[in-house]
Image 1: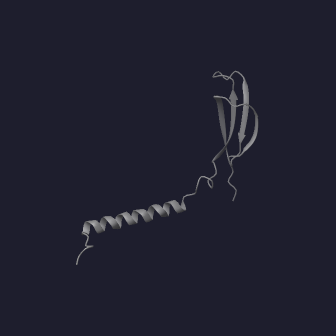
Image 2: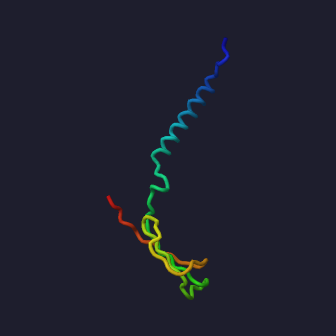
Image 3: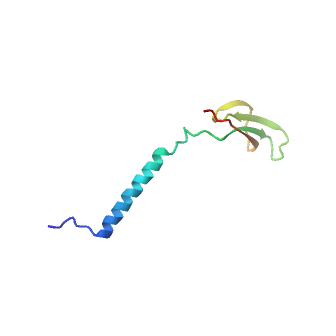
Length: 90
């Protein structure tokens, strides 16, 4: 009885899908997760009272590791930011 006979095209499709799944899994295994990846820069953010940036009302400083290291004042919708490069440690 030939209940489980498949055509050559079906076998080829199954083989290709299996290879694609294995390749996708391999890529996911070697890609670092967000928690492992460090930002390429630290950030200084200044917050202002209006769109003209008349008065600074707050400040945030984030390290290269993304840690809030310093802050004062309040945040607002009006801000400017500057980034700085990080030195990679071996």
